[in-house]
Image 1 (cartoon, helix red, strand yellow):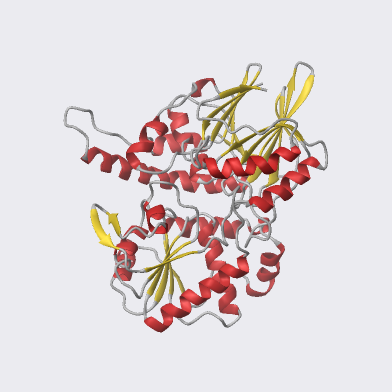
Image 2 (tube, one colour):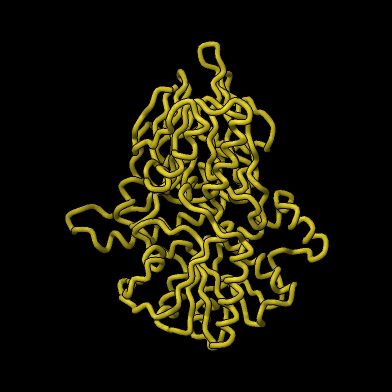
Length: 464
C-alpha cells in the first residue's frame, strides 16, 4: 500500500490523501487550501495525481478545507463515487454551491492585479462542476460495514466534529491479507455543544490522524459561556456591538444554541442578536433536518423548547439591504457573521464598522490560519487592512477557544487509548496541523504505536 500526502501536510488546510492498494486508487478528502488568495491559488488549481484515474473519494466531512476542491477534481476528469454520510452529502451540497461565489470573488480580486500581458484569471470552478460532483455523492450510514469494491470495505463512525462528520475505517484486501486503515478526518471533542462525543474505534495497521490542537488543552465550554456572557453584559452597558466571525457550518449553530440556553435561563441581556449569513440560514435548515444526530442534551431540549436555533430577539438576516442597515444601527447588539477566518463575506463589513470603536468587541471563537485577517486580529495588529484600506484596531478583542470543534491533547490521548485497548497502531501519520502541534502530539501518540509517528511533508509518499 502506498500513501501520498497531497494536502494538509505540515499545515492545517487542504486535506487530501491518496491511498493506492494494488490497482485501486482512493482519495481521502479533497479540500481547499485556505489563506492568502495569491498564495493558495496555485495549490488549489494543481493536483499531484491524475483525478481521472481515481476510483473513489471518501469524504470525512463537509468543511470546505476537506470538501472544497471536489468540483475542481470533477473538472479535471474525476467521475467516480464520493462516499460520505447522508448529513455530509446535504451539507456539502450547500457548502460547494456557496463556494462558487467565493471562487468568483477571488478570481475578480486577483484579476485586478494581474499583468496585462497575462490571460484573465478564472474561478477555480463553476456551478457546472459543483452540480457534476454532487451527482456523484453516495451516502452511507454510520456504524455499518459497506462493501465498496472487491478489495475494499468502509465503515463510518461519528467523529463528533460537525454535523455528519465521520471517522473513516477502511479494510483493504492486499495479497490475501486484510490491512486496516483509520483516518480520523477532523476528530471532535468530548462534551462539545450539540454534538456526540467521538466514537472509539478498534486499533489499526495504519492511522492517519489530524493534529490541529495537539499541543493545547481547550478550556471547558462552561468557561466560554461565562466569558461570552461577560462580553455581552459589557456591550449592553456601554452600547457597543459584539461582532462574532463564525463559520456558517457548525460554529454559528453552536453559538446560537448557547445564547438560547442563556436566554432560557434568564441570563441573556435583552439586546438584539443577528445571524448575518445567507449560508448560515440555509445550513441551519439542514441542522433542523438532522436533529437525530445531536447529543442527549439537545434531544431533551427539543422535547421542551422545540427549536434549538430560534428564540425571541434572534433575527436571521435575509437581504443585503438588511445587512447594510446593521452597519449604521445604534445601541448594543450582537452580530454573528461569516467567514470564520475573516477572509470574505459579510463579516468584513461588520468589522470595518466596528474595529475602530473602543466600545465594540470582536470575539474570535475558532482557529485562524496563518496569513488571514482573523489571525492578524488574534495577534492584535495595530492596523488591519480590509478591502484595501487600513483601519486602526481600537475595539476589544476576545479569544474564546471553548467551542473549538477539534480534539485537544487530552481528547487525543483518550481516543488513542481506545485504539490501544484492542490491537494498538502499527504505523501512524500526523497531518492537518502546524509543525509545533504535530510534533507535540507525536510524543503522545508514540506510546500507542509500533513505530514512531511520521510527520509527512507535502507530496511525500510512503510504502506501508
